[in-house]
Image 1 (cartoon, rainbow, N blue to C red):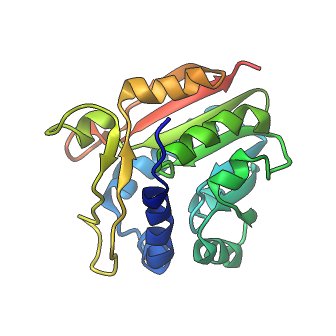
Image 2: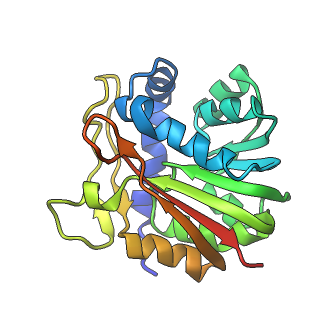
Length: 227
């Protein structure tokens, strides 16, 4: 496994710098793809499996947790950006904790949940692979891990289709966003390999469509712990 700690650190710096802009964009509905497709897609995927207790990985300012508690789901939200966790705590609705993925991979979370969800929050390389390695330990028997991410075919339509770091961009976002970070691209084969290689059965793939273009707005992968 190759390591690129500088790029991993850049991701965290980016979110620290843009926490306020992100909170405003989410709460004011500025992100079109979320309004039209991806927010409802992840909520539907979760509710279809009726978890009692859920871990929201990379919870940001807490919108998903607030939505899920309306459905009587207990939510623990974790994020590595202090300003986002503070915004989430101020809005309330769930148990929000400041933790990064390395801490989770090292066993810092002493809990069990029915489901863990990562909604557009797995942007690194080695950090994500280590996180996957610890996920079965956080799940109850036959627990689920749901990931929503950028659809690989849409993202990489004009470049080589293989895993690797990509340059970041805030295209489509307001001018309040600055200094985008690089992020790690994974093919569909690579995503499925992460699940299967870490003790999950991949039970479902979903490709939510953007109603405006009728093209995939995202990819949702649902894995079930085999333990």
